[in-house]
Image (cartoon, rainbow, N blue to C red):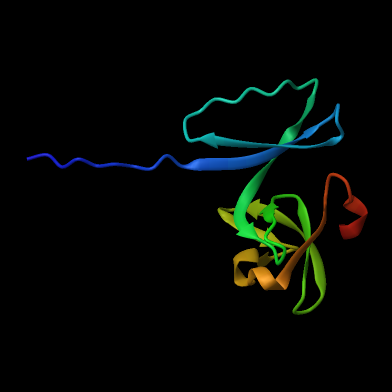
Length: 114
């Protein structure tokens, strides 16, 4: 006897820098969807959503610069070896949303983390 299995489609959120409007464009795609971005309009680097939110309930993306309130540290969010990090080597998942505040991003405000 076979069993019916229903699987949810996984959604992937990301953003890309629009060279024309000089701002981010946000996309949500389902696993298996194909997305074609015009390289003359969009930067090649895509910024994935972490699935986490900051204290203002804004979604945190790779490339965001966050301030955490415990030590008042500032760092960029990045993905490495299957894990999201804040700054050099802090796991961003170790923080509560109330501890994090997005203050910029590496595309527009790189001087915040230089």
